[in-house]
Image (cartoon, rainbow, N blue to C red; front, top):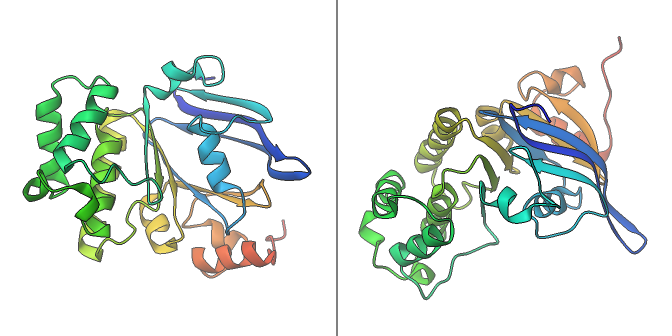
Amino acid sequence: MPADFVLAVSNLCKSYHNMVAVDGVSFAVPAGEIVGLLGPNGAGKTTTVNMILGVLEPSAGTIAIDGVDLLRRRSAALSCTNFSAVYAALPGNLSVEENLRVFGLLYEVPDLARRIEDLLVRFDLVRFRRTKAGVLSSGEQTRLTLCKALLNRPKLLLLDEPTASIDPATARGIRSTIRAFAQENASAVLWTSHNMYEVEEVCHRVLFLSHGRLLLEGDPKTLPRDHGAANLEDLFVNVAREQLHPVAA
């Protein structure tokens, strides 16, 4: 894998008995790039992300993170990875600060107290530092999971609906923070969302999955018209309905 690719996925497959969830998916994400992983429900996005996180073992294929083979050196690969997902809430019986301290210790984050303070300020959670995570609003919990995701300054950051339940002004700030983080830390970001406006604004490139296969790839600003769609949302609908009309050569 070339040194500038933080994530490299090759011929990734996942099958459950007679059902194929992911079928020969290959892509790579270089340092500093934010890539949108898109597709309708059941397209294989979550399965792909879970394989990259080491939660699921692929039926076939390889995954390399920062040059480390995930299947052979799982701990080393995941030590430079982190994620945020709406379905992965942090322990509700711990306070905001306690959650970040526990995960910071697990990731062996240097100068942890200062790192936590910086993130609490960045995501406007200072006043909630001693509040139990379980009583936070959904938007506040989303911001807390983003703090956790950035704790170890990961080389690979996976974000699943990172602005869910967030008001538009805060969401704009989060998108700006993620863009700056990717650039400053030379990190790769894999971003899944059903918000096509957000994807077009923040992602440098998008990958469309359909029935477990990689169907389309390109710049979110130009890809729609290349396939006869007015915008990214229309292209998403066409993928979901399998009504793509590629531009003739």
